[in-house]
Length: 402
Ligand SMILES: Cc1ncc(COP(=O)(O)O)c(C=O)c1O
Image 1: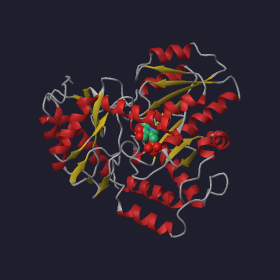
Image 2: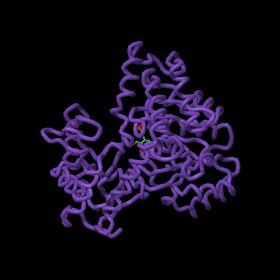
Image 3: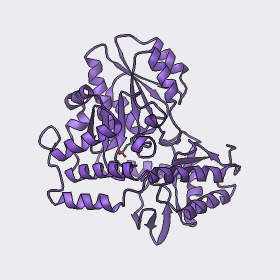
């Protein structure tokens, strides 16, 4: 295929996506402050950011980063070469203390953290009778990619329903490592994993639990250490994934696990081994973000109150609102891709930036508005959102009862 043919094929694929309302496009959205952004000549209130605690613009984090960058902006190499500094060791120790695990390892993104964790489990499986991943249907794309590229066997169980999972566990080859993979707060549905149900299964069957706490970190648990801790299951997961990109307002991810798992990760977690480590100044910012979470619990209180206010405000509206009452991820299922795009457009006309999430991120006919609230929103902005959602013309949102 020559160059022109490749370009033509791409053109055709993009045109098809456009026709199907599935084309993904970046838009330039510049932050004005913690919650306001500029899109073209419009100023919008951002209801589509995962900066749940409003830390992305926190002056203390900016100061830490500015000060620490004076001694270098990049780490220069992967952690196993020369990119592991005392700043990394210190930040990892702080994350491990916060998550109450023996160790934590920081990576450049949550995506890579999930990849490295699955690669490590794969290597552990190869020491014995292999590994099989048992994954909740709604796990994040990073986990799906990690599992699929591992080349290891895997099975999917229906979201938060365990009869199939139990059957798989009960019939498992005892020599094969079973790894259950789920999220504590699901990224697209905003609901919580049934951790008590998983705890019961753990009492009966041998498996490792990989729990992605990306969206719960900062919002739930002691000092924001996660949803599992909040509901008394802080010790349930064998490996917890944290992202620094959401509640911490930064970038990066962390694998929190036993000393031995982390040692194995340094042997087999290719996503860690073959990638330059995060810059040292980010390590200082991670520590500072954890301190803010500890010292300013009101941020957690506020974001959860805002989530609850939105859900309460939408009760009886006929909109299909998913998720835990206090979950800052507030999905409103509208059905088709077109419905989602039109609804988001209508909200934008009213000064609100809300993401329209379409397949393949969510199932066909389950396109949705994915609204996120943060502690930095003002009550008046929450009220504005609720009233705009209630006023969405019934044609734009094919109302499903909640
Ligand atoms: C559940 C979950 N895990 C992992 C990630 C990846 O995190 P990051 O954006 O830090 O790469 C995301 C990102 O959206 C996520 O939602």
